Image 1 (cartoon, rainbow, N blue to C red):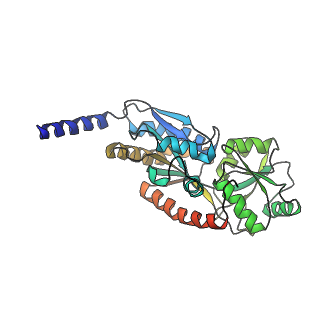
Image 2 (image 1 turned 45 degrees about the vertical axis):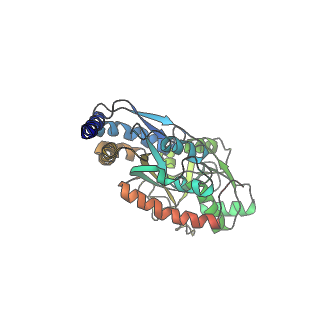
Image 3 (image 1 turned 180 degrees about the vertical axis):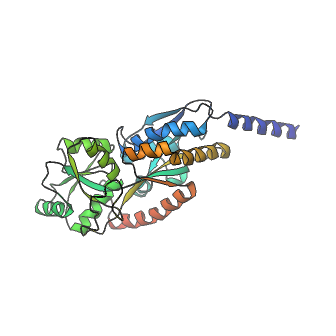
Amino acid sequence: MKRFLLAALFLLSGAADAAYPEKPINLVVAYSPGGGTDLIARAIAPYLEKYLGGGARIVIVHRPGAGGEIGFAAIANAPADGYTIGFVNTPPLMTIPIERAAQFGGPQRFELLGNVIDDPCNFAVHADSEIRNLKDLAAYAKANPGRATVGSSGIGSDDHLLMLMFERAAGVKMTHVPFKGAADVRTALLSKQITIGAINIGEAQQSIRGGAPMRNIGQFSPARTTVAPELATAREQGYDIELSSLRGMAAPKGVPPEIRDRLVKAVAAAAADPEFVSKATSVFAPLRYLSPADFDREIKQAEVGFRQLWKELPWGDK
């Protein structure tokens, strides 16, 4: 009898996995609509549906706030049934738990499905600004301590850490202004509410090519990116700073292995789909697919560095 029950449960489980997905899958974005994560989520969703098959339907759900913490928690704390997935962004995925007790716990609370984007950090100014490069910014900040306001996507975000690292490298003091996402930072910059928009290079290029009156003054990548080959890196301008944001996909820890495997395969296939690659390129999204294992390795290696940075430049709202 016991063997019969176990066999019946196994068959029912297999049938449930085979039927997946039986209802819409929520794809959580932890930042405001119109930002880089939102754009790539919307671009990749049809291809996730295509490669999941079975009439899969993806619904984009925005949960912005607290530097990404609210959205990450919405993923981590959802039922581990495969019907909630989402984007997790570095460094906030690691820096928020370093700073405080995070609602989502930490990176260990997620089943990683694969990384999609690697978008280097960048400083942008309004087109009317007299600041044209990083040395100009340093000179302005030195002459006006605290007056240079820097908009970021939240405390502990890559944008915020970039500001702290630049302050140290240039020997200046600026004022941090956190927002719920890059779209809000862009709005503030265009309305001249802030001096500097710390906006990743892909996101900034999307806006500029769309006609936004703003100018990039330095990308913080190892080398000039393909999305902005004309823009000098920070290192070329005399500042040894390198920082970017990974945007990858994840599900709550504990998703059934069969469903997890289907999601992992769908993310990999979607990220490689020529049509998706073309769409991503058209919105200046710097693609960099990483398998779950490679994504996990990058997160763990970066976390070591961020823990050291916390000792040197604590980024909490003190």
